[in-house]
Structure formats: C-alpha cells, structure tokens
Amino acid sequence: MRLLAILGLCFTFGAVALAGDGDRICDPCTMIDDVVLCPMEDYQIIEGSIAPDQGHGYYFHGIAGGFYRFTFCEGGGWADFDTGLSIQGPGTCGNYLACNDDYCGLQSQLDWTCPYDSEEWIVSVDGYASAAGDYGLAYRGPDSPSPAEGTAWGSIKALFR
Image (cartoon, rainbow, N blue to C red; front, top):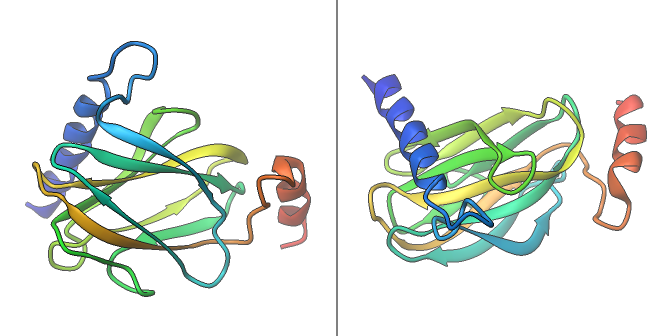
C-alpha cells in the first residue's frame, strides 16, 4: 500500500510539473532557487518555506555514481508540514527520477545514485496535497565541484574515488 502511495505522489508531482506556461514548464509549480547546492560528505542544511500548492527546487551538482541523500529525517533536517521530495533533471524540470513521501512519519527522505555528471539536477521540496510551511532540508553526497570549478573537475575527482 505504501508503494502505491509513493507512486501516486510521483505521478502527482509529474502532472503538476507539466502545468506551466510554456517557457518554463515548472511555473508555477516549482520555484527554482538561484542557490546551487554542492553536497559534501557531511550534512549541510538549506532553509526555506513554501506556500500552498507551490514547490521549491534547488539545482545541485551530481557526480556519476555518487550517492546523495536529501532528508527531513536526520542530519538536522526538519519541516513543520507534510513533505514530499523529488529529483528531476537534468535541466529545468526534466524527467522525474525519484521521489519520496512519508519516510519517517510525515517527513520525507530521498536516497539517489547519480547516473552521470551534471550541474543541472534539481531536488524539489513540496507539500503533500496543499501542505505548506517552513523547512530545513539536510543534504549530503560525495564532494561536488563548486559552481566555479564546473563538471570537468567533478569528473577528475570521481576517477580517484
């Protein structure tokens, strides 16, 4: 039953993501922040808030084969509403690759292995149904290049892991 609920959430996210205006198919469902997350081995936290029926997305750099965790359940992550998480990309509102709802109570955690290097993966924070509120998303992963270093440096680092 839980699997059906998660799959339903994935399809719901997918349907909402296509409700855009043509230029950016995510508008108004997911607001992409200008902040680029650069996951490291230790947890980092980004705080924000979402309004009803509005998700919030962050670009992050992914290294091929790297394991990433985005969570409200550990590492200092928290939220005061029923959360959902998804990963999509590469690029603005690409395909939905993974999603999670209710990993620990009403909070979400998403574990994901990056299929290839890209600076354009997006992790989206959303509320179940029209749930909204404040959050602190904890995230970690293999060392990622800073935006100034670019993907080439991430590829070199991945060779030595």
